[in-house]
Image (cartoon, rainbow, N blue to C red; front, side, top):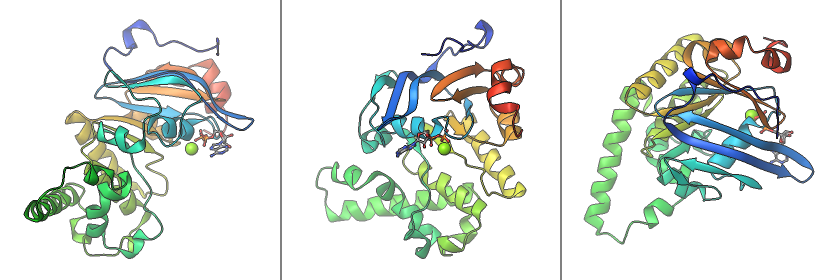
Length: 270
Ligand code: ADP
Ligand code: MG
């Protein structure tokens, strides 16, 4: 465990954590990707997760969402231990990450991608977990999902693209679609891994507006992002990872002036 870690000041401590990660460890053979990382995410916040390439951010996301089984540590979501659970179960609890649109899906329309959304992201299990239901109910369920898909596309202002192939969307429109799709799983908390990568400024603005709207509605966000302007201007709290550990966490201004963070990360190319 790191002892150089900087604690947030009392005034800025997390008071109502929606997510608690404690002593998280993940190894790949001889590589220690996550090395005892501990942090908390305040309920209803937009929290940034930053750090140099290879710091263990994506692996942390993968452990939290059940893609990887951690070698040690614990993950508590909404007061319940979820460590080692399947991605389906974790998503059903309301903790989801956005997924890049898989290779075959560009040949489907935006609306079809939305309809596939929950099923594609979570596997068949949420559908199978529903007791056998009458065909009429299946039809009604599909109708309900279709309505929600349209509403969500409208919310993200990409409803005019509903019948376009997903493969013809710009990078930014794709990111909006990925976020829209994740919302159909009824999440409480969203993990976004580099949501602004390859997004033009006007769509970036739109994406950030939607994230703020959703936050107002009570959703919690943990966002990995390299764009420091986005992190410093839009996140209420920031967690810094370095070499698989949490180097610092606190308010953006605390992070920006933190010597260890400047040395490990900010001092470089930013
Ligand atoms: P970040 O997202 O902060 O750039 P990652 O979590 O992707 O960092 O990677 C942390 C370390 O773990 C890196 O050294 C990376 O090469 C290694 N790593 C990540 N995923 C795997 C994997 N599936 N197999 C082997 N090594 C991996
Ligand atoms: Mg990464």
